[in-house]
Amino acid sequence: MGDPIAKAELFDSLARVGKALGSGKRLELLDLLAQGERSVDALARAAHLGLTTCSAHLQTLRQAGLVATRRDGTKIHYRLVGPDVAALYALLRDVAGARSAEVAAARDAYLGTDNSTAVDREELRRRLAAGEVVAVDVRPTEEYTAGHIPGAVSIPLDQLADRLADLPDGTDVVAYCRGAYCVLAHDAVRLLHTHGRRAARLADGMLEWRLADLPVATA
Image (tube, rainbow, N blue to C red; front, side, top):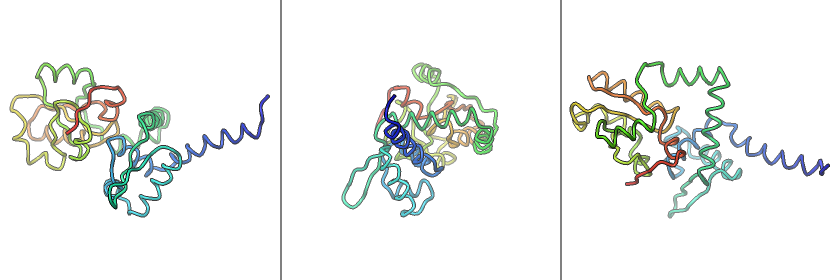
């Protein structure tokens, strides 16, 4: 029959991990860490948090066994403990998006309802190999450095308007960013269309690329 007290402790332990995920800001921090290791101050800036608040959220994630740390002088760097944590975050996001009308509405309000063409990972790989497109990574430079699609060019979104000349004339552009819920690629495609460039976006992003165990380049 089993010990009901031990069983209760087991499920309470599982619930503590679930509780660590029960914060929008902590999920945002996991989304950022899925792109690569970051210092506390870099995470705080990216997530628009104060250092103290950011540190408290990271400690909660660490106590749940989801992130680990590395000290570099006076700085503490955080990273996901493994790809299974990234997969857990992605699954939570996808299930919520598919099953919750509230999440789906919030997603559409954030990403916009443009009709931009989206290509999947296999199509992008095929077209890159054939030299038919240039892939543009519109994430911040530090995320590109931590890992990017082989052959992709780094042009952060806030630099794209000033660096259109860096893109070869007459070649289609495929923009990508962090993942399926990242707005940067959507904004990049809208900007490129405004300037008369043929552009599409990767249907998801770097998170899903890594989870699919596809090649990743670092710089």
